[in-house]
Image (cartoon, rainbow, N blue to C red; front, side, top):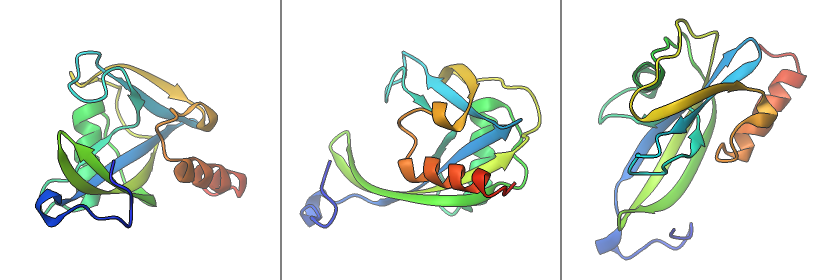
Length: 149
């Protein structure tokens, strides 16, 4: 990983990647997915639904698409609740990843996992995978404590 504030030489710099992720809430619990053990990237790791926005794609449309592709659920009216930013090295390429984090309440349908994931669970905020940014977990706790829905 390249340290923020210390950009790599121009020849090694990559693009800015816009990503989206969603906390899907159902009856006060959130959907967590475990990646397939055969996945090329992060095999067996727990995460929340999401992925990269396509070039020119609105992030709101991207999260609806990603949720549908990965879970078979329909996320209606997702709300942006946070932002994460990091510089990562992936397969030797340096990329500045900017991730918009959404919450979608009571998604419609039944979970049907794609080949990318093999297990799912509905968990409490405290049980969310440790790969979820701490700022997102804190925002959720504050939001629920204040009675926001």
